Figure (cartoon, rainbow, N blue to C red):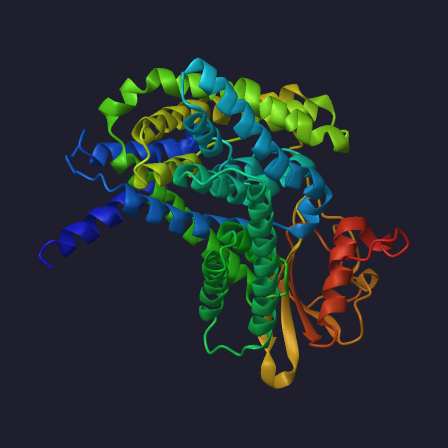
Length: 492
């Protein structure tokens, strides 16, 4: 108890510095995860002298943080944005993982003289891209929706097959004809569990009259965590169940959706900060320098051989242009996930696992610096940057249970086709009306001759029965303008 104030004070100070570091990283163009790792190293044995070397606890906390990060990623992913990229995203998260494991394992078996099981274990650890890095970097990089969608789906799903491969190789499970069936079962069962929890959770939250707004975000995140636990207990992929459940919930008509997404985003940042600081605290600078050559060799193999080849083979059925393939190859961002996966064989006492962990630290630092600093310039050089791309309108809802009505808060984002549309042209269904419009901080009651503008905020009052039709109409006009119905846009 005497150390509690010191522990809490240190934790609070680290969190404040980490929040400020986000702003600093944006200004200097340095990925924030490296600053968090540096903070952890500074607190560790090479800095303030805090000694921490518990791989089992680090692995457990790392997986818990990954569950939070995947939940935030799924909740904030718009299905309409990633749906066109679903095929290539799934191929990158499955086929590309298998190809990357095989290519990386074969190359490192030859280059580093590793035995086959350890070489493939290196390949499995390095096969997964990092959801935190992808969600935080690519969404603000001005890249087209198709590429961002593919990379988001990949990073949200590919942790599951990579995790399965690492566990199988670390435990020394016999590789025979039943292994592919096991992998298929774990992924399929994880998918079904995620869909079930996402759908049931969405239905329950829509019908629950919780006494406080702040309880809805807590309940939503709890559903994602329970989906992970259920997946693991069913010997399925809990990570896949988590992401799928969050994706379903995030694209459902949840009460107080905006508050839920803000809460999830904050929790995701907290998980990232805590995870990277913890990993930096666990790292030993002296051992990392000793593994510098191995890390650089493995990084070169992944970046220049395994990743491009896996993207090429995954993209063959989809006729992806070569420019997009180049970008997809370069955008396979690594972060905390490979380090967390590398802790699994270390916790299991696999010989050579410590060298793997240290080499992965080197690889993550080098690749993050290299790829993070060059992604946007590469997109510009390839003609793939789209700085003016519009974002879909935000629609938040709050139920009025006693009146059988709902309030929809609508934000018109820059680039929306709703800009310039007269209120009468919205043609909202019977039972729905716009009661308030806020423009430049001033609110007023609009009429049929009011013309909508970018960055307007609308308050729509609708009966529960008309709510779905009202939201579909708003999204249709947002995408296609006043002639949405004639253009075949339904707003689904």
